[in-house]
Image (tube, rainbow, N blue to C red; front, side, top):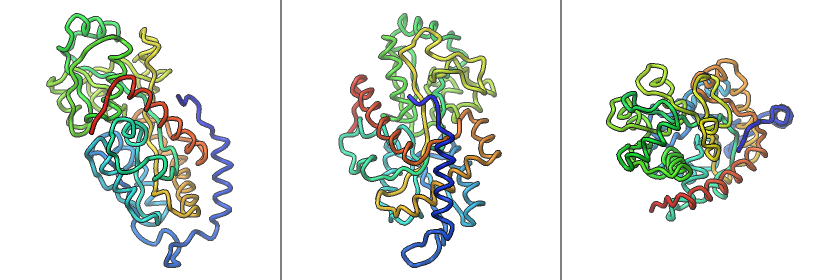
Length: 330
């Protein structure tokens, strides 16, 4: 699991990219890139963590690149529909996808009929941000700690309804992993995206959810759901009173959710370099960093090669988790 991000390597990579791109890359028509609107596909509905992060970055890129960067929400099939749309798009730098652990690392392990390969068919641009998964419960559930949740789930197996953003999503697999390492049984209730799942959690229709922090932080701060623990190896800066799952007695449970930008694999290298430079510059902007931090997300600082290696390692890691938990979808 990634615990440290290498800022020095990013600075070196950005300096090199700036030199190479001093004159700017050109499109196939000979026009300087970008010469028209850029589309950023978010493979989940509006209002979720991916959408929030995507809009923060798209707004800054629009300012920097002097071209509109629009967010295109394409939810469905655990993010696979939007990701496939990006894979099938023209490799010209005008269609990006903001993909996450779900689409890149989890889906290949649980969907046997994917028509694309996330490692082979997509070129990584940059790590945008990483965030804990937060274990959130409805205030009516009589638990205030991981220990109490485990005890209740064991005393009432199957009675606790566990929401997710959809079958096979990272929120689903995070919950299945928790159940596996704690020996508990809770009933999975899949939704079509995190916003509707969290809405029902806040209304008490379901009792628990493992959610990305950006998607849930508003409800937590508003007191509509209770944060019991976070999934990373250290506490979240904006939830300092909330312990980690590991320090709550389950050291085997440590996961990180991340977001990154990708383009079709055949995109020219000079366009990739330009996009990496632009995204890296956006992430260094104080207002972008502040907006991401407010959501509980830490801006990425990996170089492009480091991010590519990270994607490959996450692909392998979550394949093992999926096989261990037995989650499989068609």
